[in-house]
Image (cartoon, rainbow, N blue to C red; front, side, top):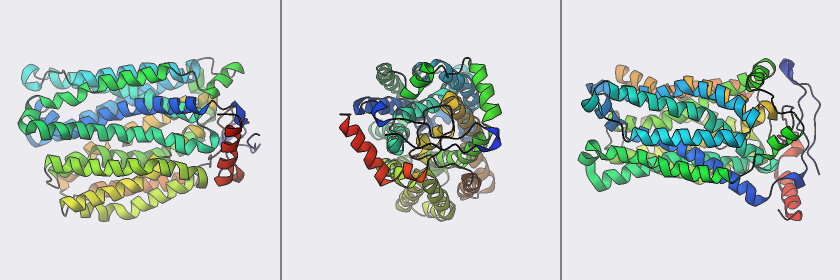
Length: 478
């Protein structure tokens, strides 16, 4: 039993668009798929644990590295953005290497770099101890983190998408983003626990360092899980057919020349995704504390409850996208955020309880985007340029719109007093995303094998297609 094909020429001069052919019996065993999911999600959790921990200790970092009064928090967020400057360079290096050498080897290197850099932030000297050298060292480590993240996220998403069954790619792919939220939530939990147990004085004096030390064991666990897996079936097929890129530079050239149209469409979707992501998950802790004037513990509770609610629904949204397609999920999310952003930000300014409700509503409206990233974006490119296509496009536009979200929001709110500006920024991003959605090809249920751009037919997804694949896997003892 195979998936259908479509010889329709792709616009913009790309090669013909097909879904490829993949027999159900060629899929890896379920146990292997689950191990691939765990390995990808663990690495992603390690990556986003750093961003989550950095965001929730931002006020402590500001005091120790940027002792310049009210501008300290701005510079702390600016140094968060510094890591995004290096992300495109990481994408340009790691992406083509992943298409040349394989996904597994690149992911092993990126998780080592990322966890080591996060750990070392915890041992940095402060401005009081070494002066200007302190923020310089912080900037260097943030750049290393950004460079490694440039390959980590795109590689993990590609790795998971190429291991997942075609009809369940939304469900399995959603666990990568479960790891994203898990990393954010773990950073929040660790800091909240330390604040409750040790108190504000200890946190300000020395305990702000402790959350960064957790990155070391997280990275080792992720590395161990990844080392036990083989290359993805899709990449193995490419190598056997002699269709893998012969050089990293050749792969990058092919990507830009032949696949510029999916690059532009993906860019239009990455913009609202990252504005929402970094406005809600990175900027929000400091915003609630310094602008809404919640206590540090209250602001962390708002974030934690919202993140737990988001984690609870993310697999269901991923699975639902396998039935209805990815585009409908994105339409629902962006229209919902556009309508509800301003009312929910106003609500968050009223009280602690309403802040919790407002953040949870926005977080749940964002989930249909987040849950389908690793099912949607890797499927926009053929296998031989997939890692590079995802890594380069995602990281270039994440660096521009994700890395700048927190400092931009902080600067505008601080200078104008317009507390609802972050909502307006999210709304603008949604308008860009809705324009790009018109040009997105539906790929739910399509095969990711081969050197043609995936595109699904209506019969490729839905309850009947999922059931047929499940029965085939069961019949093969998988």
